[in-house]
Amino acid sequence: MKHFNAIAGATLVAAIALTLGMSTYAQESADASANATGEYTFRQMHEHILEDRQAHFEEMEAHRAEVDAAIKANDYEAWKQAVSTGPMGAQMAEAISADEFPRFVEAHKLMQSAHDQMEQAHTIMEELGAPQFGKMGGHGRRAFLNKQS
Image (cartoon, rainbow, N blue to C red; front, side, top):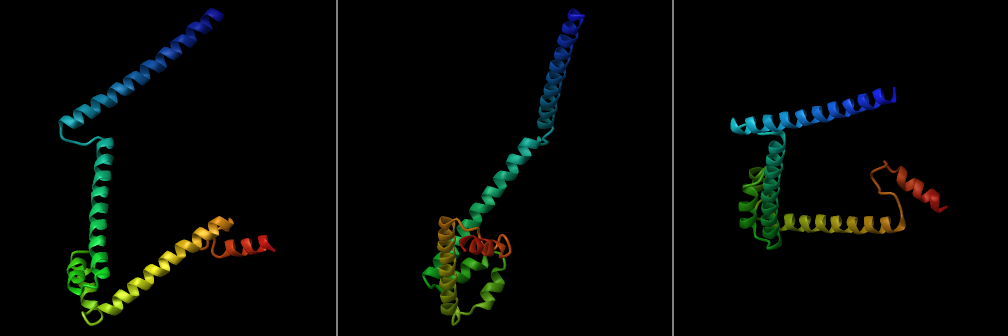
């Protein structure tokens, strides 16, 4: 009986190994034939999508840097040119005139300052071990204050 169980076990292991080997061979063959016909494998499609996303992100970052540089330089014409190539650029350029641009720059500086202050506040709250605000609908603040009492 033990001899039969050993043979059955060995047969099962061999069958699993054979199945896995055939599956791998079939996948590699399918990939090779898809490549020969000009079709992409899943991995190739995924890599292509990631490359496209990265290129798009780099373009957006360059555009943002161009707009920010024009705002920092308080240069309306450079700003207008920069935003005109971005999403909703024509609408932005129409909404802000050359006369209104200094106020726009002021608003931009205030928003940046507020953003920087929020980051500082979040850093302090993390140091204190407080839950992050906004993620718990205010319950985190109450829980933190109750913990302090």
